[in-house]
Image 1 (cartoon, rainbow, N blue to C red):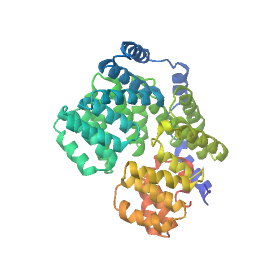
Image 2 (spheres, helix red, strand yellow):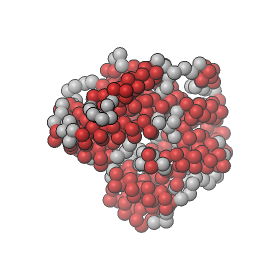
Image 3 (spheres, helix red, strand yellow):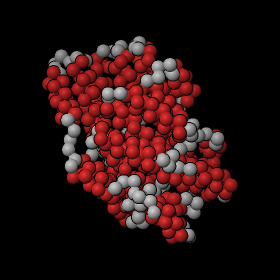
Image 4 (tube, rainbow, N blue to C red):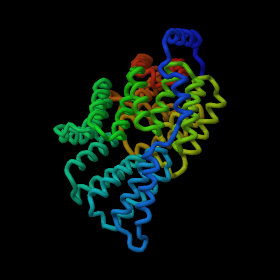
Length: 427
């Protein structure tokens, strides 16, 4: 990525804005977390649950209850430590149960729909949802799953109908989904409010509350409410010491707000050591790029790519691969292939933006602009996609459009590392 003229001035101005501010993430706080890190009691409790139900499974006469409980414990461990093998094993178990009972249990089909969403297999999730509808199960569960599936597929009219149908419930599930809906439409304040409502309705379920607050933290970063984001992430870590997502959220705040790269690196490296998720590798690559260390940025990027292109991950990290292949790893043909494949998985304004950007980076401007006109223009986009469309418009010499996209992307400036901010209009 090229350095822009004036980036040194921008750096000085940015640093001066922070020089008189107290850092939001303190070295002492992070040192205490890392030095006193212990596994919370519910982690070994989940392991005991897993062993208990696994031992009850009769491979000669397989059933449903023991297998389903075992799969649930595997999913819980995946949520904590990010081992893709746990998610795949749970999916395999539920698929076997579904086939064994001839796809007649709607609750199993809904569980499979959720597993498919977790793996970014959205067409398959819709098939499982429809199977659950045909088999019959609780209407409320169907509506929740319907929103999740249609929302991910970009079938927003259907998602809106499902959300409208559950609005009378005013519970965790409703407010969690309302937050996603508000965020899609750019109403970040309303999205945060709804997510906090979800957290309140979690009541005594500390893990559900932690998930909602972690999402609220992400929304606050997106909206530039960094003090609130820090507060929510810290609460999450209190509730769940293995909430590595929230810990990396603090690392991101240390990096983009406090300008404390060494502390951010310490956090990301710690998460990389404790979690099997590839996410920390990506954060380390972004951090290296922010510091201007392109060699280290490429090193971490390649490690990330090697991990997530394993067939076990499928389409789960396509957006990040496209970002890397159109950027630091400079392989736009691969980016185009991945983006085209993603469109067969879910065709949304966001994924069309991925495809259009991959096309223009692969020197296909006419095709890119046709995709933009037919599938992207006037549609809601996230900050990354706004940035990409700005860069595309600039390459197409549509400077007015480019400025509009860049200005919109900069409304969420804390979504980007420093090097991206410095080059946002001069790539």
